[in-house]
Image (tube, rainbow, N blue to C red; front, side, top):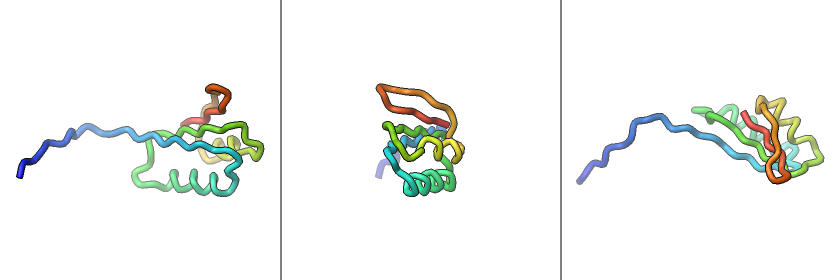
Length: 77
């Protein structure tokens, strides 16, 4: 059996969450990400013109920052 060495450098994990009127399910997803062990290094929320305030839910959950990309709203931490 041949052992292949593993790169021991730390990995960076960023989670991308697309949302369109996600409501309660979206909030539950953000809560789950916040409680993950180990937590992700960043979260990017891509909102596509939601009308239920999902982007505000993201900001309340601690996802900060705001931008637009090809007409979609981006919220990131």
